[in-house]
Image (cartoon, rainbow, N blue to C red; front, side):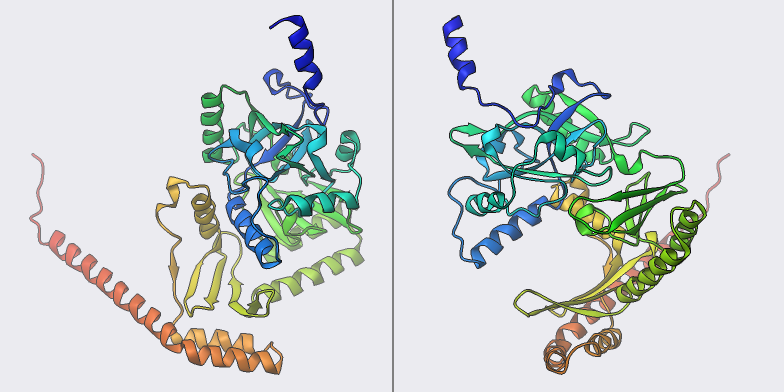
Length: 439
């Protein structure tokens, strides 16, 4: 290529947004990347978003294919409608998922910037542009200043704009302080793509498990009036105040910093965390009482059978939870009449693997249905919380689905009986074998 041709090519190269560094020259003490994190539930979110767009009157997207999987084809990010990303550096490493893509994004492609999750509708170009017109694009340095230690910011870019596309230039995966991948399967897949595409791959520390000491973290999350409080205590993070589902952990949850498994905190552990914050002078006695009252209300709510409805007012399910931590179980009666009781953490692992096309998802979570008597008790508990009109509707639904509830329970009992018989026969056969000794 001649100097003239090279000069013309450089002239047509778009200016990149974010003042990012080159992952080929990764420095763990000084870096800045625009990353598209991969989350096991991304497929579900994309599908739901497309369906919602159709219901609201927006036709199929013609400016890209948002269903293209970045887990399978990361090199095709420029063929999508858009991409949600986060700007990270050595002091702000929170991301939506435990691994993903490092992106070069032309300035003209950026439509939304937010110091927290923006809840963008990524499947519709026009809606994204309209949403972006509401607020100005934040300067990259200011965006990082508005980003808290434990929450990811969001940068939304059109996959293609005026001939310029987003481009995958590397990969990343999150690691614990011990250097272990937060998600081993995702890290393996990112390594595979990096080798296949001859692109660099870097390790990024997971901020939620970076601190080993017991202490209290206080921060004002951008766009939120309430101060967020996290207590790091004995290997767990306790979320005392100011968090929601978008942050990965809700208020009153606890996070195991080794496994990064999150769940609703037990009363004993949560009270210990609150008392620690009071003892450190980070929480007044009055604030502590307020936090504990909120916890007790949330705990009672999760343990109470509750009917849930979709946006159109149609009954979807009755659900509640029992137990805490690794012994937490969900009890659910679906609108089809099928019911289930299963371990919450086991179910999350299974569905995460399933949505990532992981071979670990070959067997479903271990669930058992409710007996007709138990199901009736749960349904009556939920009906007792409804207004008269909805109570009548749910009673009628129960009458219409009693046969399904009974059949599912009968099939379960028969299946368990057959399995028990097979085990008994095998045990009897083994007990009749002659006992042999070695000489």
